[in-house]
Image: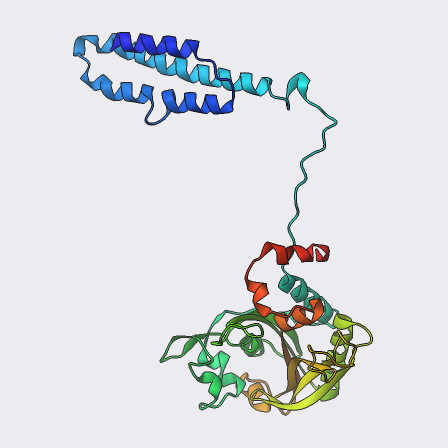
Amino acid sequence: MQDKIKKIVKEIEGYRPANEDDLEQFRIKYLGKKGVVNDLFVEFKNVAPENRKETGMLLNQLKNKAEEKFELYKKELVKNSDFSGENRDLTLSSSELELGSRHPISIVRNEIIQIFSRLGFNISEGPEVEDDWHNFTALNFPEEHPARDMQDTFFVQKNPDIALRTHTSSVQVRVMENTKPPIKTISPGRVFRNEAISARAHCIFHQIEGLYVDKNVSFADLKQTLLYFAKEMFGEKTEIRLRPSFFPFTEPSAEMDISCNICGGKGCNVCKYNGWVEILGCGMVDPNVLENCKIDSKKYTGFAFGMGIERIAMLKYQIKDLRLFFENDVRFLKQFKSAL
């Protein structure tokens, strides 16, 4: 075995790697887990006891020699590189680092938050897995309401009902339960509904819902707030209209349309040729909801509104397929670099 070790030492001394690949092969051959030196240490246990001391010394010297040569060759390769020492060209251009971009949903979310922040709204957040009280009952959903059906809601468990929240109105309930009026807050977040995925619908989407509760809050306050938002988001020439609707947690309720920002209200395929595009639902907070949250409905009134961020982003950037927001296609995401 001693002769074998001496032979390998001579091999190492005569080895001259030409490039980094050769050096890596040297490391694998002699110092790797399945390399020559490691195999010799395994074989060492079979050496006769009277020869172990001398053989062990040689074996350690071999290991040290291999490690020293590896480090020496490594330094020589670096020294001879075109990017070090006297051969370094300081006039070369640096490698360009490609910057990432914000996701369009994040861009629109932040813009919506900034607009309402200027009106004094703060931000509130809550859990994505909710109980029945905060997701439905406190919001005046009747027991037989279709939204409680498995077709619309992802239930985690039954009895008691625990589900993935279907809207961020559940956050508003938590705020009202723990905060005395005046309350002025928006609740951005991810929500879940059991819907078929298509160009216009998804089982996961993002919402921002707003709530304002104080003395003498009126529908006129709601209208002016939403008009300000529409003009800030889509341009000064944007007009709005409110159409009667129904939501369990608001009374009266309305859906808000904006004049189509693509055709200017003249009519196109986006607005279905009527000049208007629906973007959100809103209304005055139902007194039952206030009472459920221990707020005196005879003393306080409030309004609430909610919008899908994907819907706003599709209008803002004229995107026709909602699924693009979830596919992480770099070609799609690169288009939003200018919006950093």
